[in-house]
Amino acid sequence: MSSPADADVDTLILEVAQLMVTSLNLDIAAADVDPDAPLYGDGLDLDSIDILEVALAVSKKYGFQLRADNENNAAIYASLRSLAQHIAAHRTT
Image 1 (spheres, one colour):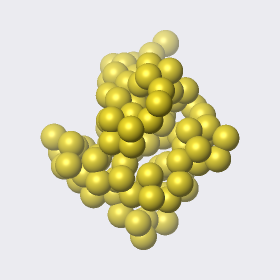
Image 2 (image 1 turned 90 degrees about the vertical axis):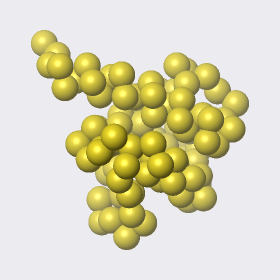
Image 3 (image 1 turned 120 degrees about the horizontal axis):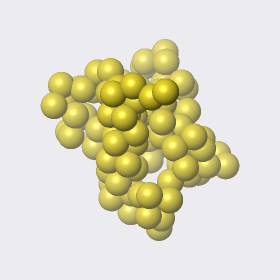
Image 4 (image 1 turned 120 degrees about the vertical axis):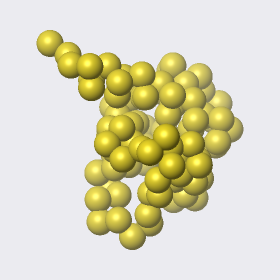
């Protein structure tokens, strides 16, 4: 059984996917981004510069900073779902 918080994250997943596709000019539809695929490597194949672009876009849209020195970055950027969950927990807008 899913909770309202799960539904919010599911909505946010598509929103963040669209933000990433737009910010990075990815050649994929936001709806086609696998929420559980790795952002680095075999998934979306993003590199560190792409992640910086995503962090900037998230900061502007959701009102909090994703810091490069955060010890949890590997977990935060593990997948679109983990990024959306982090945003849901920390967003101010």
